[in-house]
Length: 271
Image 1 (cartoon, one colour):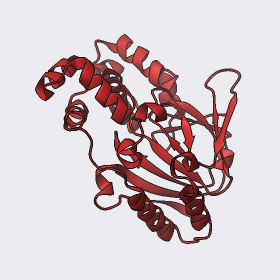
Image 2: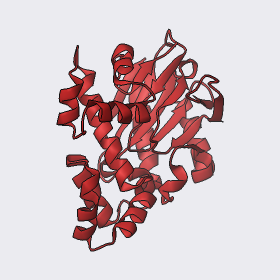
Image 3: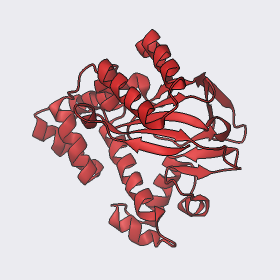
Image 4: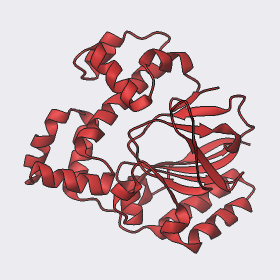
C-alpha cells in the first residue's frame, strides 16, 4: 500500500509529467475539491469501475463515468468522491501531451471525462484488467508506462504551440500573446486556434491558469500569506484582482484555500 509515482523515459517524458499509483485506505472526509491544472489526466480506478465527479454547487449533482477515463484540462475546480479513491492509477500529462498521445482535438477533451475505451477500444479494457491482476505497485507503473508508449500517436506539437507553452510558463502574461504570434509568423487568431486544438484552451486562458497555479504553489507551504505581495509577485494588478481570479479557478477565496489545505496542494478536503 502507499503512493508511488515515476516519470517515464523518452519519448513519453516530453508528454507526461508523472505516472502514479495510489493504494490507501479511504479518507475520513467524503469529498475533495481538486484544483484545475493545465494538462489532461488519465485516471484508472482499480477499486470501482466508475468515476464520480460532482457539480460545485449546493445540489452537488453526481456525474458518473467509466472507471477508466481521460480527463481533459479544465478551468474550474472539481469535486470528487473519496470513497472511490482507494486503489487508483493516473497519468498527469504536460500541456498538449494528451493531444500528442491520442491525436484527438484537445477541444474535445477540455472540461470533461472521456471513457478510455472510446479512444482506444478494447486495448483500454485489457489494460485495466492487466492492472487489476498485478499486485506490485512498481510493476503496475511499468505496465501502464509500457502501454502508453505503445499507443503513442505523435510526440510532436506545432513549433508555435511549443514556443508559446515555454514562454507562457516562464512569464504567464496575457499581454505577451500578440508578441508570441508575431514571433511565430502567425496571426493571433491562427495561433489561438492551433493552441486550443493541441492544448485544449485559448492562450489567454492558459496564461491565466498558469498564473493561478503560481499563486497556489507560493501559498501552499506558507503558514501565513501576504496576499498583496503574492499578487505583485505573480503579476496581478492588485489583491482584489488576485482574489477574483482565484475564486474563478478554484471556486473558493484564497482565505478558504488556506483554511482547507491538506498535504496535497491540488486536493482540498471537504465534508
